[in-house]
Amino acid sequence: MNRARRVLRRLAPRTLRGRLSLVALTTAALLMTILTVVFNAVMDRHLRHQTDDELRSRAAAVATTVDTTGPRVRVLETVNDRLLDANVWIYAGTRLLEKPPSATAGDPPTRAADRLAAQPRDACATVQAHGHRSVRLCAQRVPGGRATATVVTALDLTPYRSSADTLLVGSLVLDAVMLGCTYVLTRLAVGRALRPVRTMTDQATQWSAVGSDERFGAEGHPVELARLGVSLDALLDRIRTVLRHEQQLTGELSHELRTPLTRIVMELDWWRARPRTDAETRATQEVIAEAAQSMRVICDTLLNDARENALNPATVPGTTDILPVLNRLLQRLDTPDQVKTAVDTQAPVLEAGVVPAPLERILSPLLDNAARYAHSRVTVSARRIPGAVRIDVVDDGPGVPETFRDELFQPGRRADPGDGHDGAGLGLPLARRLARAVGGEVSYDPRHTPGARFTVSLPAG
Image (cartoon, rainbow, N blue to C red):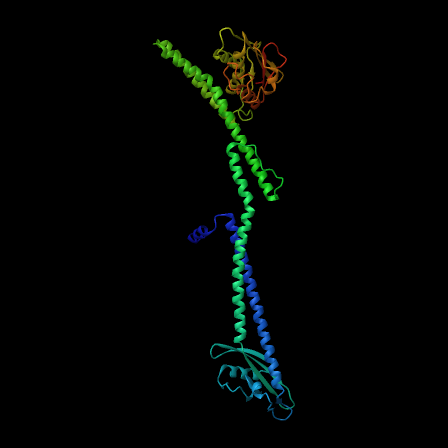
């Protein structure tokens, strides 16, 4: 059974057009088979009725030559006696009076005529004669006074069978032609109907590979293709979103890992510049280990955020004291010699409802930008407000140009790419995205002058 199924599965068409064509061919073959059987059955019955009518007409003609008015049955001689005697049996009761010249007492037609003459009513029968011929016989009673006669006529069915066989062969040939035309036309029709689907599939493949903005839409298409277009458009939107997130994650990882990698490279260059004492070597190793740990935290934070798990407050609750994190970030902050940093807070403990790793990734871009553009001072103030914690990062630099403020938090945008400062325009969008992921916000205060002030609002711990 399993082997037969495997063979049938292997023989089944693999394309939708082939399968639909096979279904149409099978359905047409079943329908034509039924119609052919019904047609030939009706024609066979019609030919049989036609034969019986012919036999009854001949029997009625022969009955005119039979006299049953007297005490005995007499057969009258006529001009066309030989024509009337051909394939005719005449009985008086069950006694045979006349029979065809070619008939013998024991042949099948004569025996069938005897049986029909013995029956009390008119009847017909079909027998096989010599030479595989079919002969149809019908008996008709000739009523009289004291005597009753029976006329049995016979007719060779070979011409009728030949006509029936010709009709059968003709119907089979017609069925074969119709099935061939059905298969060809079905393949052409299905192929034409599926051509737009194939075109849409090729276009969707091309567009998904490059994240194109092209879409199919639902206008100008049949209902089925419109639904397919809507589904493909939704799929293309999701693919484009995934590609955009992938590019964003790659850029953010590159942006965030640049600082610890720079520290590692600088420490290694400094250590290899000349022989170092054991204490200096251990200090270099500690800096490299700290930078490597920072890289690991950055990777874990961003990857967890990409999976939408680590930064969901409902699934990863936690609180963090902000002040130690600020002090640690400021110690690691690479600032020019003329720029001073300070932390302004009145509370010895200030907890936010976020775990340390995301908090560092939110604050690091703001502190890096402040140190990069400040003229002499960077001030970080932290305080509690109703239901939240607010952190202000303020510098006395040139501030954000008014024409650029609408694009400030868009990925990859910089106010002046040629200002000589390193950056890819990804830090601020990352900080805002991570803050919003934990229920907070990062905003810019355009009214603050001189310099720039960025505000971080986080849920209170």
